[in-house]
Image (cartoon, rainbow, N blue to C red; front, side):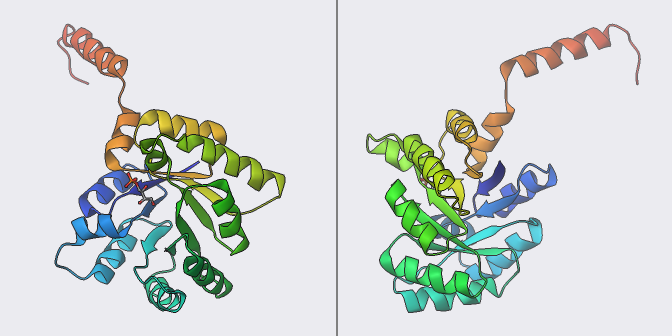
Amino acid sequence: MKVFLDTAELTEIERAAEAGLIDGITTNPSLMASAAGEGSPVEHFARICQLVDGPISAEVVATDAEGMVEEGTRLAGLHDNIVVKVPLTEDGLRACRRLSGNGIPVNVTLCFSANQAMLAAKAGATYISPFVGRLDDVGQNGMEVVAQIREIYDEYGVETQILAASLRHPRHVLQAMLIGADCATLPPKVLYQLLKHPLTDQGLERFLADWKTLGQEL
Ligand code: E4P
């Protein structure tokens, strides 16, 4: 499974990329608003592309298909790794069809049902992003939607990749992997939660204490 970092914070991106932990980046307008500050968002996307050699999702903010295609085409011109992110609306799907027809990869975001995911695939989406945590927040089972999409895509040989999004804790990540999501996007906090285990810390402490009794250096 590909692991993407769900952030626009350059320091977080650099940290995870240096350790080889991530295959790409997803952003959204909210994440950009908090990370890009006063600077140009377009330049910010370009900087992200310099830090990670993998798919970088950059979201449009127009709401009409024409505007989305215009913005998406401009974003895609920044770097070969840019994936244009469009919302799962009728206009978003029209834009998806046109952008993907022009060879631009598209991530269809704000997906909350398997039916929506089927339509996004029809429109030529490269990635579909079901929002697990936000469904859980309203009392539904977000991971069930990921499982349904997996089953439907497999049944009909759909090539659109499932990008599990809005993941809030390590259990979400494990479930997404077990279901067979193609990718998962994780906020930095969740990425480092995956890394931690108390027995690893205790074990290391013990090894180092025992080594110290040797009174030697390596
Ligand atoms: C995915 O592309 C979105 O940016 C993200 O996963 C949304 O997560 P949230 O529901 O925690 O804001």
